[in-house]
Image (cartoon, rainbow, N blue to C red):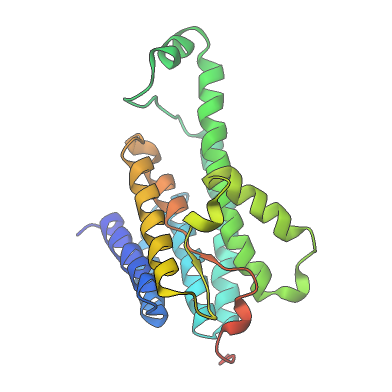
Length: 227
């Protein structure tokens, strides 16, 4: 198994562990995922997702110092991803409509700009998931309007009902039926988008849709700190 495949396998295994409320096991999978991601190119979006999920895993394990370190690295990595999107050559998709092909022929800069904006919005939404966790870990440094800005970025990236279709770990315990529904919805949304995405941008799609969030105010449900 190559490193990207191993990253994906561990990330999905962590997601399915969340579905079964095996949060400690999910954290272990995310540590393995991060280890594989360390061998990917510096600008690869999967590095950001792995670090973010690792930070959440460390928070679940009540290792606040390690959580802050991983989340801080993830925040930096998402900024690197944003810079990568700004300069990467984004090819057209195989499913592009005739309108898009004509637009590309007559106004290539316009179409490229639209595609780039879409991916930048997705990156911002995934980064907001990371920032939301970081804000909860460092509650004393969070500003009042940050939560609203994070929510807006997540909704712009993943849809108005993002909180119902994204994996948001609830450390105080969510109902099994809701947890299963959210995990399955997240995975279905990822697969649907991924199959219509050009190979060059698949790492971003995988990273963004498989970055796990934390339900607001559930950080208090973590076990006592063991730093």
